[in-house]
Each structure stands twice: as C-alpha cells, then as structure tokens.
Length: 373
Ligand code: XIL
Image (tube, rainbow, N blue to C red; front, side, top):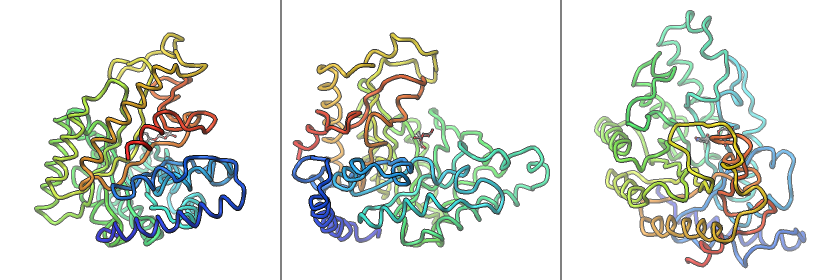
C-alpha cells in the first residue's frame, strides 16, 4: 500500500462511482454536490472522516450515505482503544472492529486503526496495584507487544494505517510520564513500532500527536524520527491531529511542521481535524460551564460561519501546497451534532467545528473546500 497510493486512490474513485450509482438507485435522501469532497481532492490526498461505531451498528441511512459519498478514508474514535477492544487479560472484543473493517471494505475506503498504544481509555485492571506488583517491566512489555501483534495481525490487509503510538510527548516536548513510560521506559515506543511492522508489513505506521505545530514539540518528534531512521526502527508517517481553533495556531507554524516532517522522509496524515469556534480558553484550563462561554446554542451566526469557512480554506490551501507530503486529511467527525468538541474541554456546549451541521447539511466551510479545487 505504501508504494501504490495512486493505484489505491484510483480504485477508490472507481468504487465511488459504483457506490454513488447504488445510492441513487436506492433513493437515499442525502443530496450533496454532484460528486463528493474526496473526489475533488483525488489528485492531492485522501479525505477521511471519523465515524462513531454506533452509526455502523445502528445505521442512520442518511449519515452512512453521506460518508460513503464524501469520504474515501475512515477512522473510528474509540473502538480500538484498549478498554474497548481488550477489556481484560485474554478478553478481546472484536465485534465493533469487525463491523468497522467490513464497512470500510464494502465502501472501498482506506481504513485507519486508532490507536494501538495510548495512556488514556485503558481498562482499570491493566495498571491495577495488584497487577503492577505481580508483573515485571519485561512482562508488561510482553503484554504491550502481544496486544499490538494480535490486533494488527487480525486486521492485516484490512486496516491500511495504524496510529501506533498516540500522544507520547507533552507540549514542551517532554515524555508524557504515563504508565508505559514509567514501567518500561522510553523503549516502549520503538518496541511498539517494531512489533506492528511484521504483524502487517503493508500497513502504514503512524506516530500521532496533538499540537505538533509547536516548534519545540515538532523538534522532539523530528529527533524521534531521526533516531528511528538511524537505527532502522520502522515509521512511515506522522499524524498531526489538527484540533485547532479559529484563532490558533499560527498556520505558518503548522505548515512548517508538515514540511519539516517531510524532510525527514516520512509522510504526514492530518488525523483529527476540527476547528473550535467557541470563545478561547487559557491553555490547559478547564473552567466550569457558563453561558457566556457557549454563545452559539441556537445557531452559528453567518459572520462566524464565514470565518470558519475561511479558516478551513486557509488550512486546505496549505495542505494542497504540501500535497507531496500530506497523504490523508481526516475530519474528526461528520456532523457538528456528534463532535467531541461539544464536550471538550467544557461539557455541554454547542460547538460547530465540522463541515456538516446538526441536520447533516453542508456548511459554508464545505462549500469553500469544494470550490477551492
Ligand atoms: C476522543 C473521542 O472522540 C471521544 O469520543 C472520547 O470520549 C475521547 O476521545 N485525541 C485523540 C482521540 O487521539 O482519541 C480523542 O478522541 C480526541 C483527542
């Protein structure tokens, strides 16, 4: 797959035509543009969406039709997280992942597995006091590598790319002192990549993180890539999450990071793009809910909707400019209705960060991106 992206895109395009014909004959209600967004950008990069597994288990026909038409890559936010897929020792919950993989295959979409190793959303038992006392760091390493091999091996050939490790560094470029780091040490990250490669030699292996536009964090990841390359540790791409806002970051820094990763000989996947439109909060502060922090409960004012569209256009102008490095751009959700940004960092607000509104209608942001090509 790594060497045949064009071929993959061509086959996706052919699949699209077939799916669109099917949708038309089934008379599905969604009425988008003549062809979808992914088709518009077919010569640049894949355009993906995150989909919550509940829409695959209990299908909403309009949403599914929209996803199949507009996107050619698919990620799901929670089903591969340790607490869902591997809730206890020797207990595997493959059901959701199987549904996801089948859906992606049926719709000829590039399937992304997110994430194999992360410190969040792990089952309580994994790092319980009892288990920590029982197991040596070498045994924990075995648990980690077995987890990776089993999952990647099961979906070999079906999942095209893996976020192998998620968020290992903080905003200052220091190691996040998570359980893996404290128990195993720095090597947990390289061993994870080394375990993923043989389990599916064709899968694209990604290091995924947020705020990679920050120069200090960018430099840390560049050092990681250089070290990996020097010692033959496999890594194919950096995943820049892309949880941005109307006013941050400075997009010049975002572009510099893409170019800098490209110079190291890895690709960039924008893995979780969304644009927060709500009032800015001081970094790393999580204030209580207040109505003044939630100004667009009824609707997004036209002026802000245009601001959002322009922001998306600026981002995509950069991505198109960097298309030899950027392989995929994935939106973190389909409709504003389901965005995690409604609840993060303050629960219960009404955010509008995506390309489709709460009624699944295209927003100006969508139209701007559609017209850019
Ligand atoms: C989010 C999911 O979208 C939510 O449903 C979940 O409650 C929390 O996690 N960075 C990541 C993603 O790598 O896994 C996170 O997804 C968003 C931030």
